[in-house]
Structure formats: structure tokens, C-alpha cells
Image (tube, rainbow, N blue to C red; front, side, top):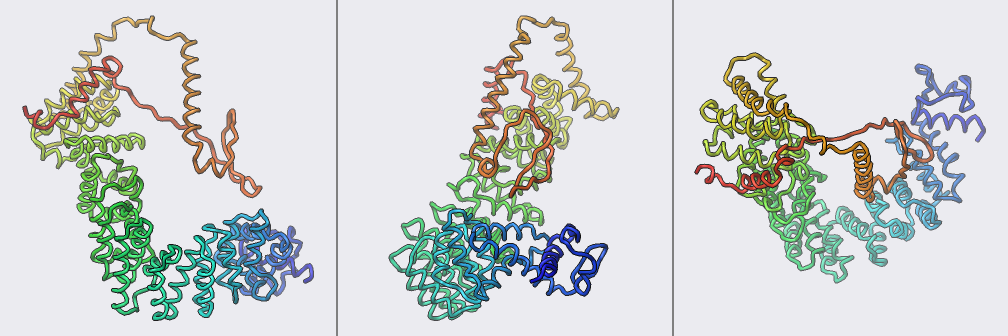
Length: 634
């Protein structure tokens, strides 16, 4: 290939991937060199024949990236992955994989052997090798099966090769048997996904003999054979298979769901969920899986129904299965990602009442553990927060509940709202209207005991005046709570809230109530302003400096301890800086864009009663938390 052709190949690669970066002078081409090849569009060259441009780009990758590094395959795979990452608009064409596949198909290289050599040299990154090989395999005319199995074992779970080999087997059905026999001959944990894939592709190609083979292997004594065969019963496409065969598979899965071995039960549960995808009339399997104890079925079922390949949402039984999970106990924290996704979708679709009923069942089931709604269901929580009435009703119900766990869950909601700086939190009007006078007093006491943030305590108590017949039902109560408790603990926040109301100049009852509370606060605080400051209790400037230094040291130690096992620490190098205005990331030797550094802080007001009378404040809070509605009626 002459020099001009090589430069045109490079130009083709740039046209397909980074057209905005093309500079003919840098490549060594002139406009005359592009005649009959390209046309200029807004000053940027574009190849007339897209297929020819693609072929040239593939040739460029072969000549510039692959062939020079055949003796250093680890570097070759790294180079190809960088090309794929940087291919921009041409990423969908997967040109690096096409380039390597062409060389394999014409006999110049063996992709599997290159992967083995790259890994064996000790310089190869398993993820990079596996990702490239997985892209290449479906494009190959032939595979050296023994070498492929060796590569799968070397890459372990980082290769993503089983799906790629499965796709290749679909277009090369004669090789299914060879892959299957190879997996059985060299049983290993890393070959389990490929063994399962060979079984499912085999059934897809020739149902009767391969189904018989799957049922035989399910009973094998070796779990490395039995478990992938059991899982294959779920991954098989049952949509065009006789009902008798489906029933047979369902019975096998049901039997394994009762096994004493947890690994067998887990595998059977996954198989059952996947089977229902293509045989939805067998959805009773999901009920049986949901009834299992000792497995994290909430996460398993929720994630499958939320993120599974098929769309089960159209099925009439879909929400019934979700309802089964609300009353499951003993589930790990963080198991609700899929459920969160589903509930948030249903909430925005207008199915609010059913979602809120689900949350109530879940809260009642888990009240003793008192999990965090924002932590377990962040998407749903965001929807509820945007719907102020639903949030207010939830707070009323959980704050007045007898079980302390409900109050703890309400506190966690309020803590999250405080961190997000959500203002104007209010109780639901309908929930307030349903309370008796004793119930309103009970709610006020629980609010004082559980709400710590100043603006939340003010806005929640003040929102009680929105109930019906407020002047007779709650004005006296709100006055006492605001003047004697909240105004005492948080005078600044209380005054700011009420002065805004008074400043409107309205002459309604609410404004008069605000004015009365402010006058009561002034009657208490004005005499205090004339008292002298006790200078003996003020720390010296030296003590203040030492305190700030020690506080900074402790904060740094706490931050270091909290982040030492973080993902960021695993993948990046931290360099301590005395000062700075921005930060940057370096990848593959290239410095990325700078990101401004911004300071962040969060402060809270401390109730005055905590500083003045800590013991008395704790005793009052405990009495309010443990008090029952019957006590407030008395």
C-alpha cells in the first residue's frame, strides 16, 4: 500500500469517528488527493461511498493498530479498546472488532490464541481482552473451540464471552455439540454460564433431544452440571413448546425450590422467574418463590420484574406479585431497587393509592427494624415529596403511631428532607381533619419530640391551622406550642416565619395568631436582652483556635476512615493539596477537562433547651415519644 492510500485510510477512520478534528495538513493530504474519494461539506471532507470509507477505516486499524502489535497482543487489545472508546459517531459500527474479525477469517490471526497470549504474558487486562473478544466472536466464520474454552477460563467472569459464544452458536448450529462437550470435559466454575448457554441454544435449535438432555443433567450429582441445567429450564424460550413440556419443567423447578441446599433454591428461583417470561400463564411460580424464607426474594423478584428482558408490566397479575413482597420480613437493606423503580412508575401513572397501601404494609412489617424510606426507595420517595399532601399524610400517620419504629421512620424522612433543604413541609389537611382534639394534641407532642430541624418544626406545627374550624380546634394549641416550645428552642426561625405573615398586613385570624405569638415571645426575650454577658464563660481566642484545629483534624480523620474503601479510592490516586480551585482526571495518559472545586457545608440550629436543661429536655422528649393517644385524651 502506497503512502497516499494509507493516509486516505486514516482519513476514512477520522471521517467516521471524529470528523470535527480533521486537519488535512496533519494527515499529509491536499484537497487534490481527495478527488473521486471525498466531497467537502462545510469545510469537512466526507467520503462519497460510505461502504468504501468503512473498508478503508478497517484497513487503517489493521495496518496501524493490529499488525504492528501482533507480537505484543496485550498492547494490541489496549489499542483497539482505546480506538473503540474514542470512535465517537462510529462507535455503533464496531470497527475495531470488524478489523480483527477480518484478519481472523482470512487466517492471518487466531483471536482466541491472541487473547490467551495477551493474558499469559501478564500484561493483559482481563476486562479489555474480554470486551474486545466478545465483540469479535459473533463476526467469526470459525472458532477453535478448545482455545475458546481456555480463554473463558482465564478471563473468569470478566470476559462476557458466554453470550457472545451463544450468538455465534446460533449461526453455527453444528458447533453447539462441540461447545457443550468441551464444557463437560473440562468442568470448571467459569464454564458454567457457557454450559447453560449451550443447552438453551441447543433447545432452540433442536427441541426434543436437547430438552431430554437438560432434564437428565438436572439430576447430575455434580452441581457444576446440575445447576446450569436447572437454570437453563428458565432461559429456554417456551413460547412455542408444548404445554406438557412446560409443565414438566415447572414441576422440576418446584421440586428444587424445596431443596435443602440454598444454592439449588436460588437457582430454581431464578429459573422460575425467567420461565414465566416466556410462559406467563405459569405465573403462580412467582407466588411460590415469594413465599420462600431464607432467600432475598424481594430483591430477586423486584429486580426481575423491573429490569427483566421481557416486559411483564402488561400482564394482569403484575401488581399482585409486587403486593406479595410488601409483607416479606428479614430482607437485606438495599434489596428494593427494582421494587423502587416499579412503585415510582406506578405512582406517576396515577396508581397512588395502591402504592401508598404497599408502603404502609411494608412499614408495618418492618417497623421494628425502622428502615429508611429515602434509603430503600429513593425514586418513590422523590415522587412522594413532590406530592406534598401524600408526604404530609404519611408523616401524620407515622408520628402518631404507637410503635416507636414508625416514629423513627418518620424522623429519617425528615432528616433526608433537611439534608435536601426542602422547605415548607406541612401536614396533610385531610389527615388533620380526621383527628380529634386529643389527636391534634398527640400529634403536636410527637412533632416536638421527633422533629429536630428548626424550619421543619415551625412549618409542621403552623400547618395545623389549615384544619377545619381551626380557630376553635387548634389555635390555642398552636399558640402554646409556638410560644412556649418552638419559640423558646428556635426563636430566630420562629420569628422569621411569623414576621413574614404579619408583614402581609392581612387582618385574618391567622395573622392575628402570628402577632399574638410574636408578642408573647417579645415578652419573654426582651427582659433577657438587658442582662449582662458572663465574660468568665467566654473562651479565650487561643482556646478557640486550638479547638478549631482539633476539630479540623478529627474531621479529616473521619473523612479518611469513611472513604478508605470507597470505589473512587480503588480506581483513582488522591494527591493532597494545600489549596486549589479545580480538579482533573487523567486517563490513558491524557488530562481531562477541569472541574471547579466547590466547598460544601451543612449546619443545623441546636434547640436552646438542649443547652440549658439537657436532662429535662430528654425527659420531656421521652414522655412525648412513649405517650399514647389515650394519655392525651385524659
